[in-house]
Length: 388
Image 1: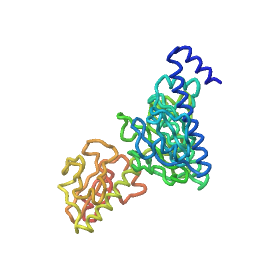
Image 2 (image 1 turned 120 degrees about the vertical axis):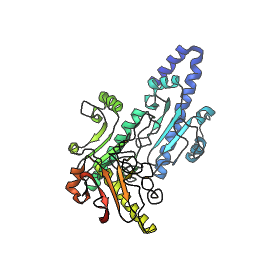
Image 3 (image 1 turned 60 degrees about the vertical axis):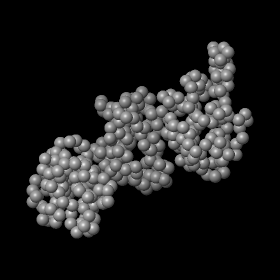
């Protein structure tokens, strides 16, 4: 009823131009409703939604699954046939258990939708109308809604995992797609896909985002924390989604955490151990092939005062034995804060120089503390290099 009233008001206000604008808007709404009905019938028959994507936000439609192909799959013959502008602006995404439909539109259509069909407003920033099923892809949502929805979907999947296995997915490091504290991996919550969520989402990106801007997760099995380091997003959640906001005055992040998650604090140690173990395995693989370890000019590193500096700071190791040479997660240019490597071909020493977490490491891995520097370094070495 409200939709009809709004349509009448717009016709009156816009006089001669009102009717064609309303007609174009209604054509889009009718098209969405017919697709929703067809997708529902398809799901009931096949147990899932048609897979595929016809494009990405802001990009032209691709040929993988066009609007016409989707209509053919669903067996739909809309009457009247949607005009070319609707079909050209149409986008469809599916993860099999959910779907998203979107059409780029005009601001006048967006205003009409706000009053008559607010559920169709997907994104006020990029002017998208459409529909997303409860577990559908979040790619067509606004930046704020995507982050809020992604975190909610991840939190729900984490709780389902715990209900089935009796504990949260375990990840002692603060893992994420671009985390500097834990493993940098797309599978940043182990064991969650595909049983509990089709795919782990990524946060919407901008040119100003830092390296560690994305969703991050850590858990010891009993407690967990899931968040994004985004102050603007945190401040925005204070008004309507306060449960997501960082409880401190800094409001530096937003997300979900269990009651005892305060004891889970970010540390570079898991990331460093991960890097050192990968490097040690690569060095041993190199020695098996070449009969020696890679030579160095001294204590080489990405930045160093005691050898040769450069991105290829262990010569010949990448990409054959390791994809890329890692850098210390402090991520700075100070020669004192780097991974360093020295070798004469027979022995080698690989260390984290001047780490701030050596005392923590000493409690669990005392054998990794450098015998030559004490807690000024830790790492791995062969017996002949222990005193270097």
